[in-house]
Length: 96
Image (cartoon, rainbow, N blue to C red; front, top):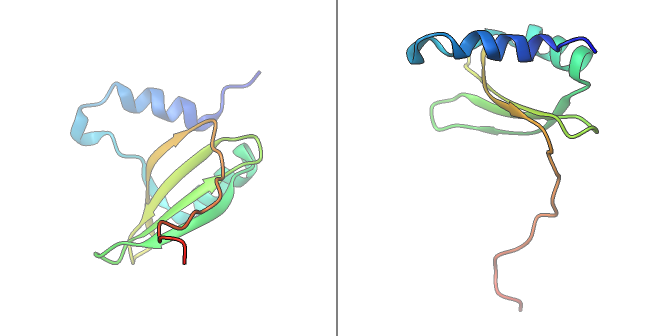
């Protein structure tokens, strides 16, 4: 089985000093890579108080990736993993 490029990048990042452990690039490149190599697509997103967009990408197989994108279109990988599960949103309000 071929080792996914993203895993190889993570291993390479682990050997760098802490301040240099951020994988960033053009958002379009991340989308292309995540779709082609991991079958991940955007499933949720939000806007931070500083104007950055947080996106969660997931696959039917359970892999997931979180990206943060600044207003200039530069994206950085925040986290990635396995065993993603969509859960039903529940109300925390008391029943009427």
